[in-house]
Length: 398
Image 1 (cartoon, rainbow, N blue to C red):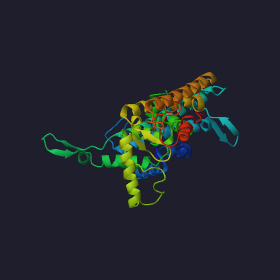
Image 2: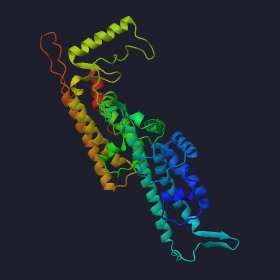
Image 3: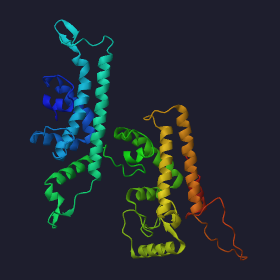
């Protein structure tokens, strides 16, 4: 447990007049395991409990930034647990059970609560709201620690080089340890395999009140939209390139892949296979195309920074529109959901049309009489057979 004294409970929630924590121990333990542990992840929660047992907490406000990373994490976590436990306990605290039966608990110097229970409900709702607000602050703080770079060498007042990690003692090591443990939690802020990987990115397209909890609840819907709708419309290979570019900001290498079927999975290329790979790479450079694996061949016009930047933005808008139309986590009127779904389908069709416009037709081979047939206008050349390309661009949207 990370709250064991009444002073710690009062530090997190001072608006109570309890003299002992004994009556709340069970509620506090339940709150830690039901409300806090999965957000931190079991490895980080266990490490925090161990640090709490071995180190006296600094009795200060949660805004004190001079107390070390573990202590700051503890103070934020205690607020989450305190409000959640008080909200859980209020129903039992309002009742007195003795040999005479069940009675309402009433203090001599305080008026009795209203008979319809609105006061108790208001207190419980307030505690629940504050518990989730404290939890969001805790997750935001962990997210900031993950994004903050490790301090490097700097110049001291005398002009000589010093290292911030030495000045801060074990603080940087504490932060790195916390971040490494939190990465094992499902509430870790970065879902790197998604085009919308974090709450911060989603918030810039849809107002979810900056709630990290709500973003985690939306992840199954985001994965379904990306894997079953977006990937089927633009192809898995191109989608992977767009995601990698959105995450790392790097353009793909033009010769980093082997044509499909050249090298079986789990084998080492032979000299002949290596020659085929070199030949394919040279052919790609000559024709302006790049083999990307199992689906189709990219044209270089799809792999420029402006194009990929535009695709990232437009596909994220598609995902958000389809998310509003699909999810039950966000509360919208039925008319809004239908309109968002229709907008998402239309925007996805616009994206596929945009991709078609970027790919110039392959030069046709002259036939026996010396004439050059025109390429079919309905089938842009992305590599592979015409049937494969047609299937790619006519994939179902939903």
